[in-house]
Image (cartoon, rainbow, N blue to C red; front, side, top):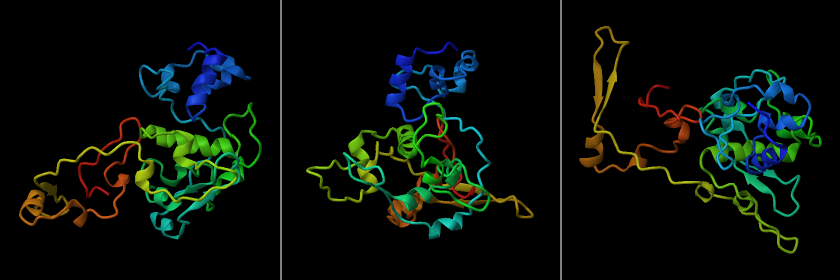
Length: 256
């Protein structure tokens, strides 16, 4: 794949949080990238400047993620205030626990905590606390790491990525902190889910096999139950367990 002109690369990078391996064309080692197939960097067949559909950035020297038990999320902080780099905008109130509760999706906690030694979970600034080095795109500075990590995931889910979505602008040097609700930063409404008439579960562990039938439709129609009366505090990972670009939908709610 020919190396793209620097001006085009700059345009792609400015509109997308993840720095593609192609960006290294402007730096040392560009010759190694020119003959790589498109699919090494792009997840779709016809990438464009507006929708480059870049794959996750390669991270040199990445260690295997340390498994984190699901019960560990009960003891984590609810919110983090990202205010080390605030100037024109106020600090970001990051709902950490809300994101951690979705650890069942994809790589779990390792999506963000991707470089942890065994038995320890490192904060972002442990690895990204230094200034950005344009010759080492795999380890950006703290500001770049925040934006790359947050924007890449939110853009994947058709989220708005304008600055004001996460940052409250400062006026006359003052700002009133606002804790956002999940619906305030939602990119698009979830499509209506057609409730099934019934679920049929196989019971292979039983000596004679057999099935168990749950008449879902009757609970809705005969008993007048609303969805939230049974489906409470469930997040995306309850139904979606796959990764982009095809977010697999679970067909069996008991498969986990």
